[in-house]
Amino acid sequence: MSSPSIARKFIPELTCPREFGLGGMIRDLSPAKPSTISRAPLSSLGQLDLLPTELLLITLGLLDFRSLSRISRVSLRGKEIVEALPAYKDMMEHAPEALTALGKTRLLQHHSALLLHQTLKSDKCISCFMFGGFLFLPTSERLCADCLYENIALRMTTPTIAKQCFGLTGKQLQRIPIMYSIPGTYNMWLEISRKRVYRLVSVKQAKQLAIEIHGSAENVASLMPSAPTAKMTERQFAIFKQFHEASLEPPDCDLSRLPRDEDVIVDDYCAMASIRFPFLTSTGADNGRVCRGCLFATERHARRRMPEMVMPEIVPPDVESSRAYIGLMLRLHSEEGFFQHIQTCCGVKYALRGE
Image (cartoon, rainbow, N blue to C red; front, top):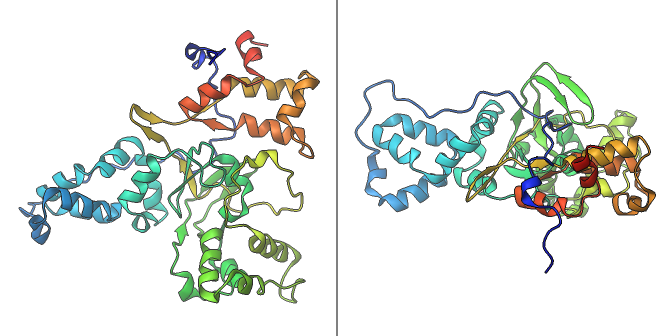
């Protein structure tokens, strides 16, 4: 087997110091901190103390972080055992901002410590199966930026729209997490400013619930009118159609390399339900990195200076070239994935030469 043409020592030089277009999600949050006991604590955990330590840790792992926080405030014993939990230690050390985001959006109680820990230690986007550098708060799943923008099933919508679109009642909708948005400015290819709190649900979860309630995907599909009703605007009809057509199966491919439907309605709540999320490896946290070679290639393409011979490798048939190049520029890679990527990246030679 031939040795790699680009040595590992070039990884820092080929890593973009700035990540263009990836900072528009939830951000600038104070990290979660371990709880403190401000009063005389009880000496034990009550009946939980009857469990062997190993079984107690397994049991606590099934609880959510809100419950764990409460237990840690009950007694010194509770604080010690919670802080000894691997899921608690790793999340508090490597992803405390994600816990803050889950708390502020009122989703913290919906995910067990074990589930969050599993996501922290996985690296694959649940949509394209490439590296995902973001946590999708409603489901505690890992996503990449492109799937977050392109995959309709991963959008958020209001409970009102979800009920109308999928034939659900308010009581039924309470069976899935309802997120309370964090006011602020978000930017994912399009800047949006949301100054008030919105109640939002995941389109994917709402559609899954509808299939469960109505008995089949076919029954849910029959709820979609063939044309706008008297009480429905053209935009509402288009949104409903998008949500009904959204596949619940992962595409298992880079969506930036597929032709884009130009009729897709702009996402009103894009980036409002996600936050940067590291990948925890045996050697530490991996936040992912953007390739400087891809940035150089994109800039050269914009100046019409990329060789024609490399175009077929980068731009698939029927895909707009700018879309394919931007997809490259915004793609995060794990450390090992980055090393493999730079071996074949057509822009690496330009980045190393500073062209």
